[in-house]
Image (cartoon, rainbow over the protein chains, first blue to last red):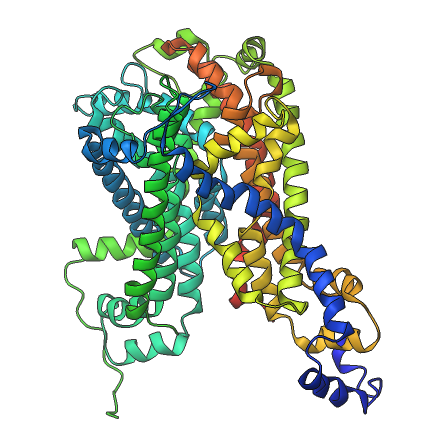
Length: 319
Length: 293
């Protein structure tokens, strides 16, 4: 750019090598000391906020998780690992883990597969693609509460439009609100609808970054489009798939808004994260037990991140 | 290397074979139209339903358009929850929260890239780790801290715990690293200090990424639900999502849907407008590598 190119004569020639040689002798000269304070002034507030509101809670949860403590009550009893014993022996836990696993796999898989299909469909020089790309991304930025209410109305077994359509083509309208399997399916569908555009836009960017000559070479060699996709496109997309996998799994383990607004009691939809909320702020106000589940969830997130970094990255092709 | 001669087009099978239909669908406007409809229809249904009377909803033969576009349900919803006040609360929390967040992210990212400091990479990793701590995990300890400080039912109580930012810092650090060093070094030689280099060179050059971070923060603050839900109990201090939850609980019967759709319009449409106006910044931000020149 013009700024850097326009002033070669401006730099005092002798000075530049001198400052580069300095740090060898004096590591912490006045300039470094100045930088030290500048760094703290600039990054300090953010770091402090992160320490107080992200790090402290993780440690404090461990402390709370040892207590039998009703939220709002002034006293608590020390129970040691009692809450953990309860968590790992409770029959509820198995169900919560099952729901969490189904929810995560289905929302992540669903939105990534649909996102890729949409991206492939939109990856062509046709008018309207820009509009479609923006449209498909839109639900991702919308309020989960608003989206949840809209779909609640659509799914409503009594007056929802989905039931009307299903009955019109001769199918029974499912009891979306009552059957725990269906409540879970319903919430998953809404999350996939909301998140697929994110995957689509990112995949689309990846597809557009694939060099033309690679695809043309494959076509010249007579590769079918199916073959081209699996041998050329898919491997080149693997860094993006890896990125999406990580962000989507972490996001789905944090999914709250739509679950809460569509199924406030967590009937069939109590994931780990929703259990943390229900235990503390539901009807029982079991702060200690909620903290226990939060600790377990946090450990799970850490383990998952490490596993993903370890095993997925090895198979990733970086272009 | 073998020389491949151009081949004549291979036989494609029956014109209406599933494979041909599939590729035709993908390559034509059909795909685009289907994709747009999947997204647009539920939202359109929301807007139309927000004008329908309860009687129009219970019928077995629903109509597409409402009988009238009078804002009856909006007026009615505003009687159950202070809709205008909630809207104002949401705007206030969003503007202040996102504004501070973007500022903090810019300053932190600049410090991480341009300012000498011991163990900067460790600090950066420590900031990144927070992306892994979901708000639900920190919810209870933060609730206890903020309520001890008297933050229940206050604006600062809603805003403060969410201000620390890993996402914005991460995105802006990537962007700052991609700025040619010659740019800032030239300014440094001219005697510009960190503050001037930050605001006169780094920030203007990074405007699209900053817009992306700002937009994401705005959307996040506007939609944020869990934290305001637990820290606010006074209806006049609620943000829109929390107010809608109250409305949903008070309108348990099917007849409440028109009011809920009116509320959903109030929370969804402003974000849609912002998104339409600024979507090129998001898309530019997400495809950074390809767009940069």
